[in-house]
Amino acid sequence: MANEAEFNYLNSQQAPHCSVCSLFRSSFSQQQQRHQEQQPTSSAVLIPDQLFGSNNKSNTSILLRCSSCRVCVHAKCYGVAETTPAMSWLCRRCDRNLDTAKCCLCLQKGGALKPTSDTRWAHIVCALSLPGIFFDQPAIREPIVVNRMVREKVVFVNCVFCAGRSDCSSVFYRGVCLPCAGSSAGKRCGRAFHPTCGLVNGVRFTVGLDGLFSGCCCSVSSRPAAKKKVPQHVNVGQQVFAKHPDGRYAAVSDDCH
Ligand SMILES: [Zn+2]
Ligand SMILES: [Zn+2]
Ligand SMILES: [Zn+2]
Ligand SMILES: [Zn+2]
Ligand SMILES: [Zn+2]
Image 1 (cartoon, rainbow, N blue to C red):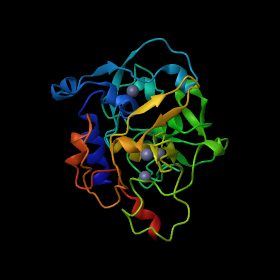
Image 2 (image 1 turned 120 degrees about the vertical axis):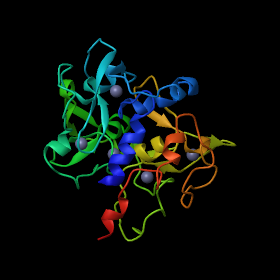
Image 3 (image 1 turned 90 degrees about the horizontal axis):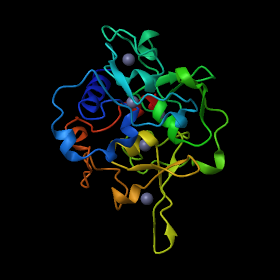
């Protein structure tokens, strides 16, 4: 929990501060990020509302920080009212006192979690970026419906960023990965990554006309980053993670027991 809270805190120190909007972090300039010393009480929302399946026009929102896990989100991105008191706010998971809950898609803790329709938990960013996952009630961003995932468009292979970083070689199920959109010499990269691992490793996410997310692992690592504590190809918006003791979302190793 301590690791996770530190991760959440560091993550929120840079624009756009919101854990959900961090999907589009790379569209912010380095300049802007350097000068964000104090966290504002509200900021621009980077995720278009249509991606949630809702249609709210306003594009700024207050920032809320969970007083337990310290995750920081826009009220809008998390699907709570703009009038929510920022003092002593708890995210859904901490409100239910479920410190051990993790995302059923990427198997990681930390970040902004929401209940799923099958009584598990998932990251809002994983729900947004993996095809076929949607929010049953878009306005409140939950529950996340995970059982209609478009299986042809996701892969269940080792994540290029976190494979080998834990002792979980015996664990068969490794979560859901997004295939890398990169290719060289006409050959597809063939690797894949958890959305959250892509995020903390500086993958730039883009949304196609079909509304589907893609990202390219090749742009941040030319070889599997398994043993690197800190990626060498640090990207805009990534510096803060390098300061974190293990540089990524915590606790894949929980699966080993
Ligand atoms: Zn946001
Ligand atoms: Zn929390
Ligand atoms: Zn996740
Ligand atoms: Zn991963
Ligand atoms: Zn790749």
